[in-house]
Structure formats: structure tokens, C-alpha cells
Image (tube, rainbow, N blue to C red; front, side):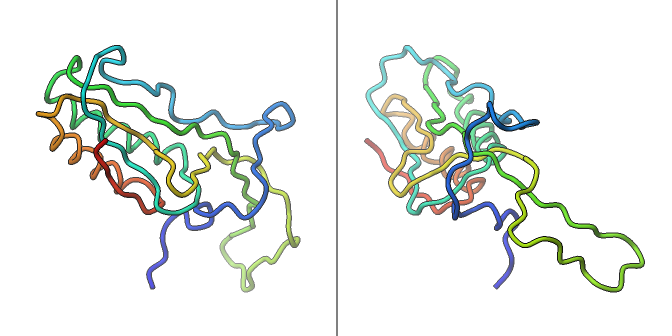
Amino acid sequence: MPLRPGRCYSKLDTMPYTRKEYIKGAPPPKLTRYDFGNPSGNFKSRVELYALEDGLVRSNALDAARMIANKEMETIGQQNYHLKVNKYPHHILRENKMLAMAGADRLQEGMRLAFGKPIGTAAIVNKGDVILYIRCDPSAIELAKRALKKAASKISVKTRIRVV
């Protein structure tokens, strides 16, 4: 079985680590805007990308999914859709960096259960949670489905698309 990049951060096996007032050097999330297109538009259809399993989605994966979905939807004009990222990356990821240098004949083992330094943020996603959605007119549903299918390839948990 091939190894996935970021596999260390795809499952939440400890308590969420979210209290930024206690954390020195907590990195900001890569995602800065959550609404795109026309948020006040009156659209009849809603196409959702929802999770099929529990897990973590890193902030750079959310940002990549947002970018590709927005780029796909901009072909119909910014006033004709509303894209919203529903999840916020609260959970702070930590990593215990190990030494890796030339000439080492053994791997460093280090401390067991070491705390680690903050390296990034992730959104906690539960089964059935809507990660992002697009509101649009019924004529643009196929385009919205295609945009969310491309966005789903950037997200680390299994997802499905539904039209509401």
C-alpha cells in the first residue's frame, strides 16, 4: 500500500489542541476568506461536499480546495454563485522534529510521547459534516459538481457530493 503524504495528520487521536492563548508561535491558518462569489444572492440550488469519515483537513488543503473550486466557478461570473468554506482550521498540529544529518549510522529515537512544536493548523471534520458548498442557479449545477469534484481531490478525507 503506498504511503500518503500527511498521513500523520489525517486522524485525530488526541484531544483537540486549540487554545491559542497558551501556545507560543501558533501559525495562522492559510485560509483567510471563507465566502466567495455573491454571498447575498438568491440562488435556488445548493451543491455540498460532505465528509464520509472522521478526520483532519489541513488548512493548506482547504485553501487548495477553495482555490480550485472558485477558479472553476468563475467561468460563469462572480455574481452567479456563492462558494462558502464551512470548516475553520482550529486544531494546531505539532511535530517533534528529529535529527537527520549526513553520516548518521543509526536513526535517532528521541523521547517517547514528546510534545512537539506547532507546525500548522487543521480543521476537525466529523462524518457527515459539510466541508464546503456552492449555491447557484439550477443551470449551473453540473459546473458546481465538477468544481467540487476537483476540490475533493485536495482533501484528505473521503468525501461525496450531494445536491440540495
